[in-house]
Length: 414
Image 1 (tube, rainbow, N blue to C red):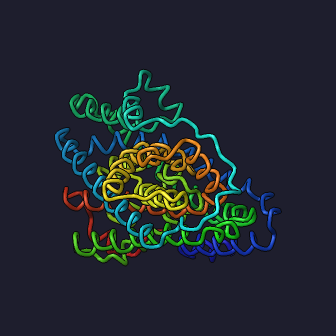
Image 2: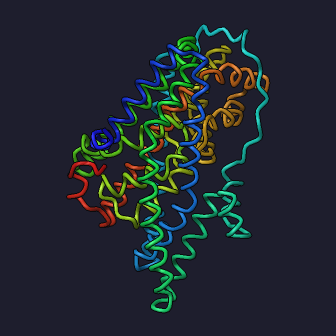
């Protein structure tokens, strides 16, 4: 029985679990909350891996480059690509919102204002990249600080040469062990996804989403367009690789992202599929993907752009072309500062909505209106974010000669 279960491709098991979770959630209703603990365990297992996986794989990845100068080339190319895809996502979001008019005629009278929590700006997040205590950064899970220290440590090992060979081997072995643990944890994914989806649907997610169907259509439609048209075109026409094979290879990561709605929690799975299914070498996956989980928020940028127009339409605020440009620029900046955790984008709205003249009170009403069903919208945004991470990683890997095309074209590894 167990052999038959493990013989089924993981993404198929996760997909079945997702569908069953929807059915159980609809039938069981709020009672589905009693199995949420299974999903919570799965998320904790994934989060357990994030910091040790980044630390070991990034250090070993930098050492594998053999030349610190190559790191600068990869970094600049990665950031440029992330900013480019984010800009495209914003344009898609604004265009869809302008056409569909999701906020027109929406009644906000029943929305309870929500106090907005203070969020760190992109500058504040970047300032915190330098850890005063690297051990504390590892313990607290400060991803940017861990990335910074790991890169420095890897460069230090390279510069130390033969004397640091034992340390280099230690991190190489550690990275291999962490990837094996990731594969073990992923076997729990179908059960975790089932419990999380059943809980989300059970507390009325779908019913609530129908209350703002136009907004849901805009967000899901925009995200799907970004994934299959924009990303698919980059893979097919930019890299001349089969787009279908790419999407087949990243399904596991997309399913985990959709169910956990956290880019950070999905990172171990994202790194695993990048190396096992896409032929991206450790040098790239260990540096590009952790950075993407912290600064690449295409789905978030698309969503915030849509919600900005949704809010303006709901409150009857007329926008001109200059306002659209301001929304696009502001959204790009705040999306970089978005934390890779559930519903983080809701608390970035203040900066964007303020840029088009909305008051704090109006913003609080919009957040209160969106909160009940934001989880379902956030799930799609997160799947878009990690898809973008993997596209950029593939582009960087191929252009830097760190790409195994035979592995990419082969069947996905289970």
